[in-house]
Image: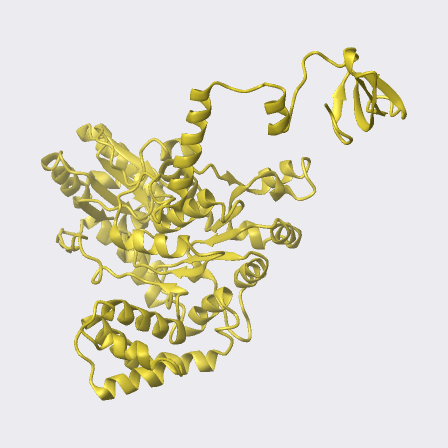
Length: 525
C-alpha cells in the first residue's frame, strides 16, 4: 500500500504523485497528479500498477518481502561495523599515505589533523618534511569529513611538485588552475573554482586579478594551504599585495595552514603578520608581541622544569601559579608534585595550560635538526681546483667592461665563470672542454657508480649542457630538472628519487621544480 506523497508508476509507464487513497470492495484506488501532464485528480486502481515496483523505504521492502539472503546482510553489517571502528581509531587518516612514518611528522599531523578548522604555521627546518606534514593533515581532514574543499597556493615553480606529491603520496587528485584553465572553467560555472573540490594555484595567479581573487574568496573552501609563506611581506604602513590577497582569503576560509622554513627571514614584523593571519584576535598588537617575545625564557624554563619530572620547590610552585593565573590551580599543582600515578598527567596538563596562555600557543609548530633524531649530519667538503687561463682572461675583460658595477654584482658574477666566458665567446662556447670541475665531476661519478648524486647548478642552461657532456663523453645518464621541464619528466621518478634505475645522477637548476631532495652526495655548481 502506498501513502499520500509517494510516487507510483502505472503499467503504461507514466508516474503519478499520490494525494489520496480510497478503498472499494477490497481494492485500492490512488488519486493524484500525473507528473508528465500535470493533470490533477487522476485515479489509478492498484491492478493497473507497474508489476516491477521499486521500494525506496526499508520498511516497504520488508513488508513486500523483498529481502536479501542472510549472508549478504551479515557481510554489509560487518563492513559498516569495521568502517565505523576504523574511523574511531585515534590514528584514522594517518595510515593511507605512501610516506615513512617519522615521529615528529606523525605528532604534528595527529595533533593538527584532529582539530576542527586548524589554523597553524608549520615552520620546520628545510628537509624535515613540511610538505608531508601538510599532506598528512589534509588526508586526515578529508577522510574524516572535517574538510571537503581544499585550496593550495604555492610559488609558481612549486605547483607541479605539489601536484605530484599529493597524488603519489596521498592519492589526492588536485586540479592545477592557471589562466587557461580559469578561462575554460568560466564556461561551466559562474565561479570557475566551483568546478573542482581540490585546487592548486600559484600565489601570483591569485593576487594578479581582483575578480579572480573575489572568486577564490567566494568558493567556500574548508582549508587553505600556503607554501613558502615567508614571501608574504608585511609592514604596518605598506603590506605587500601577496599578503593582502592571502589575508582576504584567510578571512573567508575557516582552516589555514602556512608553511615556511624561515619564519623570521624577513624580520619580526612579517613573522607577526603571518601569525596574525591565523589568529587576529590573539596577535593584534605588534608592540605587545615584541614585548612578549622578550619574556619567553621564564615560560620555557617552567616547561622544562615540568618535563624533567623532578620535585618542585615552593618557589617554583608559586611561579607556576602566577603564570597560569587560575584560582583552582592548587589541586593540580599538588598532584603534579606528588608521587601518585596522576603526577605525570597533571604535569602534562600544566604544560598545556602554559602553552595556551603564553607565546604562540598552539599556532606555531617548529622542529629543528638539532631537536629531531635520526637525520644524518651534513658535512662540507671543499675541493680546490685551478682557475683556467680562459676564465682568467674573461674575468679580467669583464672587470674592465663592467667597471660601473657594484662590488656585490662583480662578486656574484665571479661565482659563474662559465657564464662570463660565454658572454664573450657565445652561448655555443665549449667551456666544459677545459673546466677542471667537469673533469673532477666525471671522475667522481665514475668511481661512485653505486651512489646517488645531486648536482645543483645556478642556471638551467648549465645543467642542460652538463648533462649532455656527461652522456656523450662518459656515457653517464643523468636526469635533468628545471622549472621549464614537463610534468611527465618530473613524474618519471618517485618523490625523493628512491627508484633504483641506471640514472642515479640528477642535475637541477636552482629555483627549479626539484626541492627538498636528500642525496648521499650533493654537489653545487
